[in-house]
Length: 302
Length: 283
Image 1: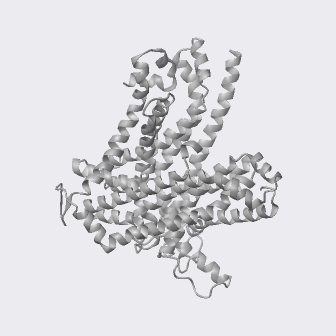
Image 2: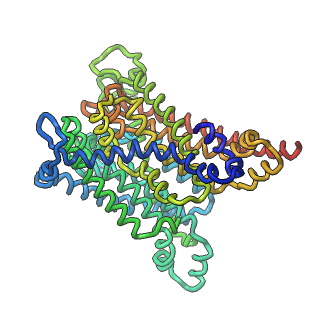
């Protein structure tokens, strides 16, 4: 197979010149390695997760007798169900904040900076923090937020507060702050990209016809940037819903998201419970992405 | 809209604040990495400026109560893993994107199957793979179960990059070469490869950095021999020390070196492409 696919990589021509059977199937030969890899290592593990969620879990072992017990435990347990609600709450807050905080920046980069070089420099500036390990970036919030952290020190020096703010670290707030800072760029990028593509003459025409800045934003700029918002929202949602590291680093393990519970369950070899939570997370994710994709038709817009 | 001076200034100021917000923790990390050691903690005030924690990272300090970061082997593993992931996912991405150059029935499902790999949260994929390994009695190792998941994660990125490159690729140049009787091998070397090279480089860069920093997938499937991110995650549980910040600064510098290499290679490839075009004219 290697002999057939390798020359075809760069030179579709010879393959095309051979008529009939091979030419028709060369596409599938090229695709086969990728498809096989994804089926074996992506579809099978996810299928396995769904299957295991129906297995019988006892304290010390797991057997493949099918049961709904783990599911019943999940939905009747205060801890697990609470974690589900907390995950959804933090996801909504982070999603809303990344949008509200990110949009003005995207607007500036995409619409007000017309020089392509400056645009690129600004976007690269936003991306540079990503060159530090994700986990270290999360840890770097600790000296920022703590009782003797940078924010409290600055606010105290400025005389804005007289007592250090305690709620900054090891609370849900610190988790939200950390996540917003880490993920907001995924919102800025796609929106700025869509905004930069808007045909300038459209806006000029609107202005010539007497439209106010606000009307132009509402009727032209915002609707045209919507695909970017949706792509950004999908990025942020996927990452926040599956999060556990930020929560465990910045909440002192006090805020448990679904991801954290999966980690704990796997640690204590409770595979069936972990699988149930995994399936719940997958379903939430599917609903969220499906819902977002209904807002705009991405395949048509991009 | 961009003529509105007030709005422009306001948004510009906002963007400046936004960038400070992005860099804030980063700067604090940089400052605290010069904390005095070993008694200085990861918080203000700075007791005394020193490079103690940098020497600590490299194991050049006398033993103290702060255990050295287990970076030596972990770093080597992470780099090996990132390199292998980079090679495999770039090859898979290029092959698949090449397959997509022609329309075929079933392209939709195949496209989504591949893209699913970057959409599924790492913790789910790691869990699924751990379950499979557990059932089949496969040992979980960083070069086995973790490696295949890294490729599942990075292959879609490589695929999308190559797809974008092939979409903008002018097929008629290739066809002209064949029509003129240039051998397929020579066509690939002289025409196709120089044209897709920037894409290949970007795909490699994506795959390498994503894999190097990958963590939720590796956590469940990496086994007992830890990679770099897992080693850092291990420090979450215990007290953190400024050595982790010093290490963060060092890795960032390493990343910059990598990015610069990429930039230089990219610039060289563009120049060579121009040069080659001129050469072909003369020939």
